[in-house]
Image (cartoon, helix red, strand yellow):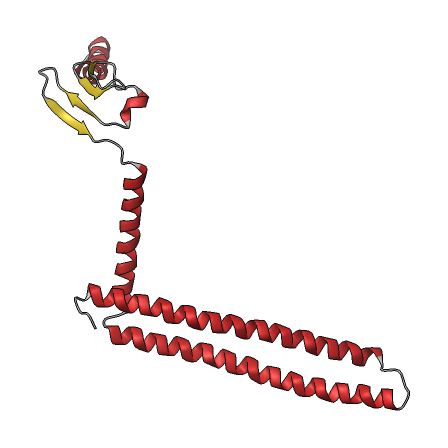
Length: 197
């Protein structure tokens, strides 16, 4: 069993060994003048991005740190990663281009249903508005003032019709966007599956 002083020496030696072995390493990098530099202290922060090599005490390369990618290269890598992720999702969703066609049909049917409901509601509002305007006209013909609540109801119906008009326009835009999006998915899936259908 080790006595306390001997134990202390072992611990100190254990702590020093990594430092001593690290001290034998050399760092080789190119500075801003294009000169290759060998340094025991490490690579200055401004040159790390260019990449460097770590050499052992015999001058052999033991580690190569590649240059950091350029902004364009990083963007290309991000684009490739996004494309791969998108392709993987596409292949999970669809097994054939016919699946894409069926999905588009379902989406368009859903949007057509929403457009149909909105148009039906519009027609109902127009009928209500016509009835209220008829009541307002009767009041005017009889020489009476049109009640404020009647005017407010007519205004509300007009506003509601405008809102429905905007909804229908949005559904129509969604319909076009869906057709374009599914067409792109179909073309990409055909490429991924090796077909040109």
